[in-house]
Image (cartoon, rainbow, N blue to C red; front, side, top):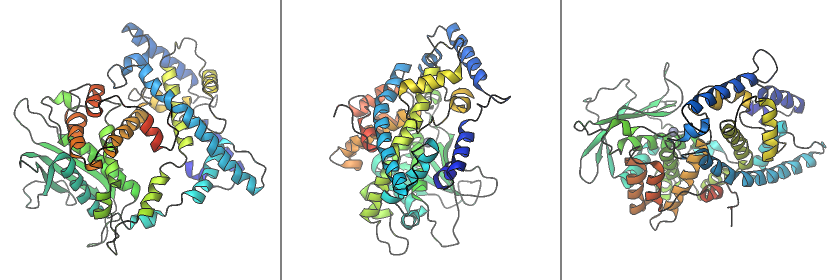
Length: 460
Ligand SMILES: [Zn+2]
């Protein structure tokens, strides 16, 4: 759907694809989900009433960092007006291009991605093949180990004598130690390449988590991805997105390796908090020490030029009005459904009315409309929890600014030590809101996220 709406010049086909995609589960036939949603909400409400909660969201959020629906809603509502204002600018930019084409068309929802791509080409063009020449997988792994040394005081020593068995010859194992004391921390396995039968994507996992209540057990964990192996002796080049993902998954690894929690049950994650550590680590890919020493051209060995890095950073603010608005609309609706009294609910009418009240722009639709909003209705992992993606991004942007403001920047030893102590090592043994306050000296605000997306900061 997205590539078609982005690249097809056939406007009537774009409209047909758009209507088909966004009507899933909403066609008044045997697959229509509207009545099922009302029933699901009724049953959820009945259950939490029995448990003595005001509504489903209040029950769901009790053990999350947001604590209650008001906390999550407050965050979403703080970002919403700026996102709408940015949409107006984006639509105006796209309308100017459409007007110049002389078609007389105004921007409809099936035109948004199409004209946004034209704006992107005019303003943000970035050649991903050019960027790749600076992203050698082996260098990036060295860079991650360097960052882990500076921030976490970890040393990574490859185990090459075969003393640790592995499940495939592609897998490499490192012993992780404290680089100051030499103390053993754990084993880190890396399984980087695609092969038949391997699960797709990239992930981090543990085979044994840290615990000390019954004697120290060594932590065993891995990072996994699906890069295409090069010819023997040829460096493996990856995309910027994949490089970010490497750092992201390594953030999960640093989270489990740095644990100092005695009890396994306190090693678990909190749904709206487990992506903070991994998303935060992505920021180190763009630090000068990594760029100058590790992001070097595969042929010439020259570091990636400043203007290319500036283009990559600039591209991060592209189309943020659209992306933020379509996401927030779904997150706000998720919270509305799970805080309302669902008795006698007409889902179709409610969705229309609630979005109109929010001032939803005509050119954008919810990222997941109610009849196919699986996060909210097909399971309970993300029901009344879709907001948590945004919650993590607010924390990440705010935490990253703690480094940006520090005398030593992203390698400031004091901020790094506080990050390891309060955001990583304590896992789930301290309330995340308290832990974050210990790290930052205050609660997170949305200001840093607004800056990162190129939105005006409220009250400024
Ligand atoms: Zn993750």
